[in-house]
Image 1: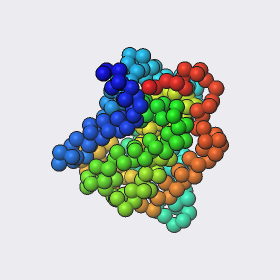
Image 2: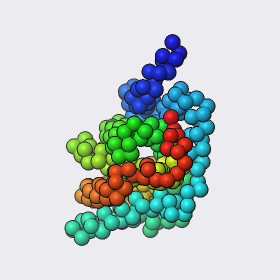
Image 3: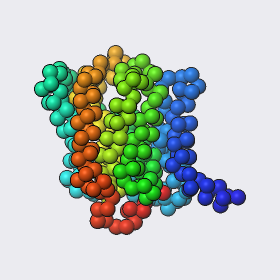
Image 4: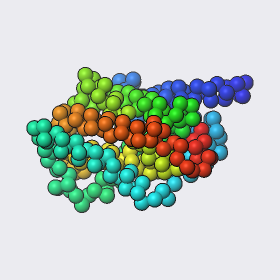
Amino acid sequence: MKAAILALLKRHAFIVFVTLTVLISWFPWYTRGVGFLVFGPSIAGLVMIALTSGKKGLRDLGQRALRWRVGFLWWAVALFFTGLTLLLSIAINTIWGGTLPSFTFFRQEWYLIPVFFLLTIIGGPLGEEFGWRGFALPHLQRQWGAMAASIVIGIVWALWHLPLFFQSDSIHYQIGLSLLPIYVVGEIVLAIIITWVYNQTGSSLLVGGIILHNADNFWATTLLTTDTLTSAFQGGAQSQLDMQLYIVSTAVGALVALTLAIATKWQLGLSAARPKSLQQSGE
């Protein structure tokens, strides 16, 4: 019986993972609370790896989460790639008559950048990446390839945020359900970029997952909103999102992701030369 259950779990591992993620993360929402539990994906990912791969899978996960020796270039890409893409979006939006962002964080609290970056890791990527890139990406890449895996994860990742679209003090609420398709595209774009860096860094969950994900959150907050660390702790009003800039940045990101996909022949670095064991890790 145990063997049959494990075989069933492995056969439908991604579906079980998504189900667990939703059940855990959306608990406050479907019990008439507000928002969701951000650690749902990581908890679900750890559970699935433990059930399907046992100690060996968990040991491999730990190794990927601590893999920091990936070269200066890939650290730079993880930290600055999405920021440069947003700066390009801001330039294009300004040329088209849009308003230049205020860059409030950099003008007022630039000295708190390291603190802000570290704090947002705890409240974001650590709660998600052991699921999205720790379990889901390696699992789906082996079955469908890098591009298809990125698109599927991007869609699920976007829809996972659905409770926030009903939370009045969130950016997602400002975006609104009418622009949910654009939001989905944005998450697919980020998933593609993360997959590319994850694969190019030898399956580094640290650099290609946690750091890159956090850098994207950091740049989106500091470049596209008026939020600061102080305003966040004081519980001030949510800054207003420039919708034109948001749409432009999504379009630019989509072009960047498409360029990456074509340049890598839709492999996003999966076929890059590295030990075979790294390609097979993560389940």
